[in-house]
Image (cartoon, rainbow, N blue to C red; front, side, top):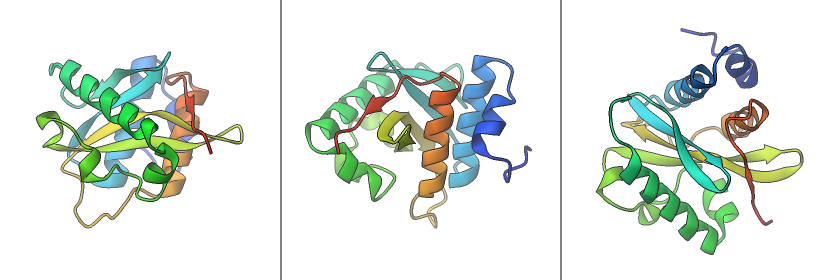
Length: 158
């Protein structure tokens, strides 16, 4: 297990390949949430792309489509207000049976003075005692995903 006290960006930058960086980002979310597994999708040219999963042989296409629709629905409202308070989306925003075994988490934080979305993770069976992911973790992880060029962030209107 890696040193969880080490800054998030340092943990991700220490990985040598793009795939290893993505796996490390997912591992950080799993460690922080107490989840049993999950999937990480990063934004690239306005689309969510699967970059890491604890179930590498599973097809993530349906889940990808569901998450993209969820993000579009949230952007039609005000993503900043719905995603910043509880770091995860409310149950009403979840779509489709693909999310029954996982909790979607919008990876939103500050980067270069702007609020941006870097992607979405789906965490399987997170610790029910956890109320929300710490804001610091979401900010650092969002910055790290952009810094190591795993995500092409979408700027949120403030």
